[in-house]
Image (cartoon, chains in turn orange, purple):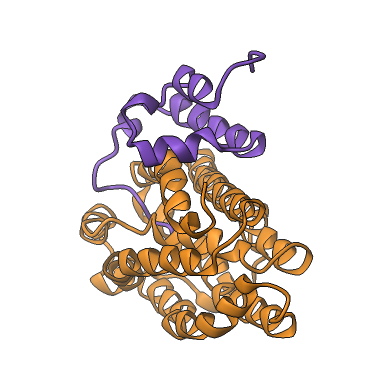
Length: 229
Length: 67
């Protein structure tokens, strides 16, 4: 593999395993109690999304501190701010959706996020601090390249009976994230990673997909358990 | 289960990935995967294979990762 192809290489690997994540999400959306399942999904996703800007800020800070160490950190220090701008306030969107879905937002946000969400997001804090901030691009790409399908918001509104306002975040992400995903792969190409860091980014993406599939499976398992008499 | 001497292509194909229909560029990526990457990919494929057939052929009612 050549050093400047890291983005395209990551796209190939994510494409190979994305069917597993889509399968887990499809199973989630087929659950019997669609309304309660969607509410649990919103709470779980708030646990993910509220860490997006802090994760990028941490990566940016580490890159600025070590900017001269390698080209990847210099490129990230220059280009992460524009990506940061694009992700502002998404947690506030989700909180509004939670309220529109009938959840007590203050109560839900006071609850501890699940172990699956901690494993998904927490790995990124570890790799930024203890390996290399560029690992975060694997996480971002894996999530952005598996954004909600454009028809999902309408289908879920039909299945749950919840108002349209409860689906604004997935509706917006289905419109925005395809472009964001491509931009992250381009950014990765620009970093000109060596083989070792390219591999680290792909491992980060694969871990992300596996952890998110586990988080979706855990929501479904909890809902199924609660539905049993 | 890994078989000594087996290539990445062989392992991926045995797991059900249509690797020989991939483009040359994609095949170059797959050939260079490390053991750690391959293990994660095979684990994810096993999870998909264990899922119910109706969710393996998911339609628009899929996706949902948010960043």
